[in-house]
Image (cartoon, rainbow, N blue to C red; front, side, top):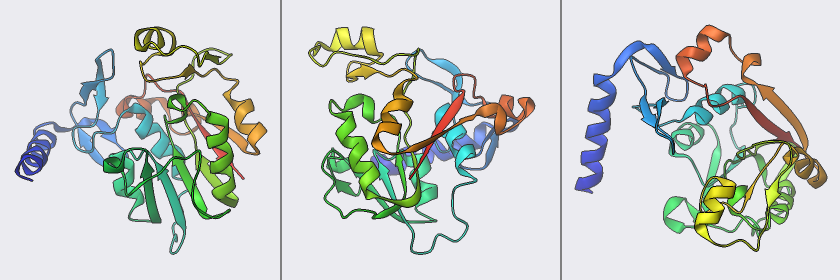
Length: 235
């Protein structure tokens, strides 16, 4: 508990020291003179010093503003492998449930390939940067579609590179996976044909470009150089 309190105090002090007007985080609605470095390649201006959002979180939050209900009383949202920066905001608006394979990381331990809940349970779902870790990703997609209500929406983001998805589930060596798929715990590298996997499950897919969300000046303040678009699914 003391260690957590110390980390919180350090984060508060850090955010205060970096306050300014050059950069803006829409997730926590704070302005800073600098973001923190981050990413596997240690890029500059990546992580919000207050809420720890990364580029993909800030772009997603912009895209979600037209979807988040102003009156979400009684509406249910499922958050898979919850990102703390987004969870803190979503808990304020929805009947919120977070799940993860690791019990310590969420409200409930759950395998999304076998969701123990009725059909059409949730009005909204967030499942971001999860499927690249799951061998049977199609089963996970079918389950997410099943528990989403008709006319509901889902944010299902994955790392995308190239046109065709590359996968070989017989490859288990962590070093080979890191070379082929970007991380040692990834089981595939998705291409833009990921859209066909989503559609074959039943989802309609909207691909939103960051240029459609904000102007170029605002993009610089958000520091979104590594991100280009958000995929939103509907049932």
